[in-house]
Amino acid sequence: MTEAHGSLLSVAPLEIRHRIYQQLLGAETHLFFDKGHLQMVPCQGADDVSHRMPKWDKMCKFDDPVWIRRVESSWGCHWKCEEIYLNGVEGGDRISHMPLLSLLLTSKTMYFDVVQFFSHPSQYVHFTDLETIDCLLSATASSVARGTSDRGRWSIFRSVHNIGLTLRASLRLLGTLYVPYLSKPHMERERGTPPRQFATPEGSGCLRQYEQWKRLWPSLLELPHLQRLSFWLDHNEYYGWDLVNEREILQDLSDVMPGLTKHGVEVYVNLPRLPLNKRSSYMEEEYFVGEEPEFCLQRRTRLPWIYADENVMHEGEPGVKWAVNNENGEIPLHYPKDQISEPDFDWMMFDAMGWDMDSKEFERSYLGNQIMHGGNFM
Image (cartoon, rainbow, N blue to C red; front, top):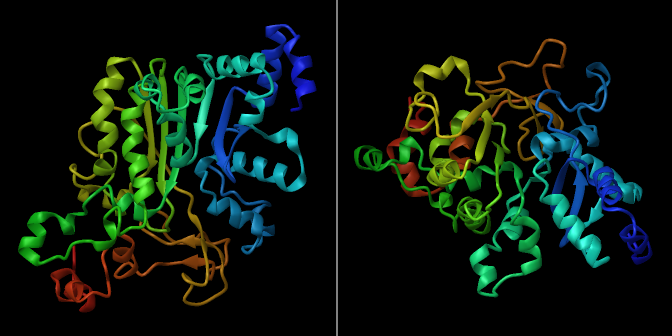
């Protein structure tokens, strides 16, 4: 938006200006960084139901780059919103998105309009990565008072009422947030299970994201007008959700729940459904299967399709594959039987969970012994 457009807009009545912002940004807005610039795009709504195919099943090509991009989307259930933005960038459609900074700098009137727009009780602000929400929420009230952060940035987001956070996180990051059963202290003493070298914040290569995760939850307590938080979480691998310890992963959220509840904040957490055929074996200390958590927990069916590249495929061509695991089961009959990816659960799973599979310590451990000799390591 140019300065001339901003001048014309500033003389319009406030009601008209807000209607224009509503048309441009919608009732729900995504905020994210692209090449260092904070961008906005209207939310198209979450999609946890479709298979994200660009065409009907029988016409779909498994190497279709559009389908691959949708399956790989780090925006998770908001893949449609990412696609709207990317199509606008690639096609030159500047109406579909806009830089937030340029909008704020157009005029003082527009600056305060945007602040008021995001502060409306019915307005939802969505984030799909830790980088953006950390940047915008780390400017706490206390740091502003000390003069150590940007007052303008804080003035916009200190009054936000509704936050939606969608994270399709790497297993490497999630692995830094919990200790699996086979690495618990008593297991190490009894069976000599080695520590997970690649599950530390430094060893995982996810130190920055780990620190952002740790800052996120306390920062929510400093939002005086927050009334609702919706959190959608998944990992980005083809293994089932039962691979991870969801209770420990969400412990940081649980720690701040008393404060959020005290201020009347509604918290909704959406996690993948646990495979029913193994439900009886789930331990309450690792999964939310017994006592209800402090937040409202919702479950969903995960997208059964994954993108398998040359590093994953032992045979066949790379492309979109049906992930064969405890949750998805076998590929439906009307799909080609070779369009599957069935991970080697004995080895690749433990590598993804942070153990150094090539180390002598792992090879000599009880766990390594059981895997190498085909035993029951659980």
